[in-house]
Image (tube, rainbow, N blue to C red; front, side, top):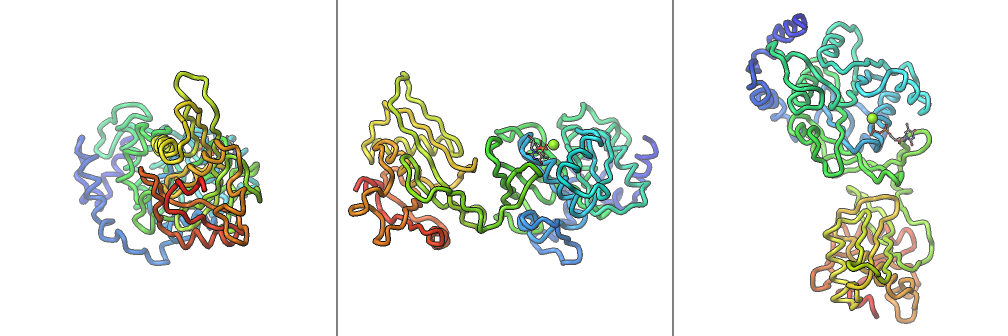
Length: 426
Ligand code: TYD
Ligand code: MG
């Protein structure tokens, strides 16, 4: 242990920059440490220190690729596919896998299952930050990237000043200290570190949220576990944009990239009862998907509202608007709403589609089934519903309308243009 802390102290560069000692370490260090970075924030790193992940959807999310020596927090719910994607990453470019949760054998099995080149993997099975530090100091090998899986199971016994860290792995102090030390290793070695962090559905577990300000980039991997679609987002990126997303599908042999042209999730070529098609923006790309509604007479004292992929409060609001503006007596109906592909919708542009789907289910008729009077244009294109709906039932325009129109058109559909949801009834 002594050796480790000596080495740490012995690094003059770090020592000068950081007030080492006691509890101040966590607070003071971060600011000081980040100052250097601060100056480069927002500026695009030169190509020479950026390298590709070998996975284009991953590159797209990061901006250009991985920045040398950067620290990336890779968070998501347990079981969503974090280990899988990062295993695939090392499979592409080679690197060190710090396995805190699984054994080397288990990693080996995954590598085999994914059909990756085992030679690209150096697996270090440890839960100790001190051990990792020592290993990196001793090894002759230069790693471009290291994956630490996961931050919740890593711990260190002593910090730079030699004092003991309180708490076991997963505690707030351990998570912070471990991350801090990992960031230092990344800078010192010029090696990008991907730190895996589990979050719960509300994202509030001690861990990832705490670390967001420490790292250079924060990635979220999300999707419905029952569905196979996975979306990689960034909520912070010192080296690139934060509005791009990467889309993947979880398959037998790992995560497959979904290209723009196959991002359309609509299978059916005709309108179905209770279904409305919409176009949402995933980052800068339009994605067509289907909202399904089931509106059935309720026999419960309180009618049920069960939504999947749709924000509960937003959904409740749509139910209220449907009652007021469309005149559906929803107080005595159960309402179930879902989105195809397990996508979570976080834009209001899908409001109109939610209302249209409810209307269709309530009336037991597919949308646009009456071409003579319907909202369809003369060419009988299938309808697409895009628009934010106000409390009064007014339909508002949304951002990127042209892109969405184009997407709909390219798939033989047309955006329905109405000013008020009441027009759904005509
Ligand atoms: P995993 O990467 O272990 O999740 P995390 O690290 O985020 O906890 O992935 C877990 C799920 O992914 C698991 O239920 C099995 C599934 N999976 C596949 O469907 N295909 C695969 O090739 C792999 C490796 C996993
Ligand atoms: Mg895992």
